[in-house]
Length: 402
Image (cartoon, rainbow, N blue to C red; front, side):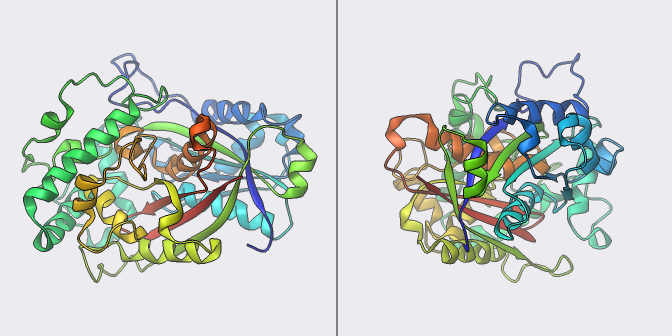
């Protein structure tokens, strides 16, 4: 990093969807503007005035279909008149849109064109029936190659990844690790009041997760192995050193130590369906920039859109060696009390997966972790890994506790 970049404030909305008590027959999603207003108001508590914001970046995947609205950048000044005429950029990279929004803002600070940048990520998906939403999400893949008969496209893709991965491991151990993944996700989400699974009251989570897949859904993955449809937004306030002096924020800050971005061709199939090779490249680039290795991490927030994706990403990060992630999960653990907590927030399966917001939400969760209690004061580094499509876009960010 040519200069220092800090997170000086964050905010999450409630993640709405199946699992929340409020998500019932009377539920109506909030509008894009309502979310924008909530997010701007949420981070405003970290600033003497909103007119100190030099620039903003918005991450979103599919508002044109879910909400019949484009040009989201222009919603920022609509959310608050103090942001009128500031530069605003809207970015899209499928499920990695939030991560791309963060790296876009980081680059603006590094280029010294802005000192205080507001980053928003949001997605409102419960505006259409799930079957239509599944069709929209499939646009993150090469649509010309999509099988018309395949309704749940990405669950089927990651079911295929499971099929490939299981050829290299003990299937019984793999399935036990996937059950443990779900248990960890829901257990953690129950302690986060804004998480989608916060109200989950299932008593025997492991038994609930250990159900056979429905062949009408996927061959290998049951519903508990998948993240759900979500409505939510997240916001992060990024600052340079000069920006921190300007806003005079006396609250906790954390530093961005490094980041990595990798994109592979949407037209090509993965060379190895049992590995997240593009994610691995992004992580390695972030480690190189931060000058650290995986053994220095104190927390990881990774992209478990499916539990098998989470397992593969443990290997991509280097936490586990190739085809040993399941052994790692069962032997060393991934819970909050483990040596290295994985998805402290509940991750995509527990906290929720509002597509365009996920990468930003991961940063919020890491900020909250380092601020949560004195037990984390000696923890140094954390990492987020945000993935778009079938490992086609990967954004890895290393955070330093200071």
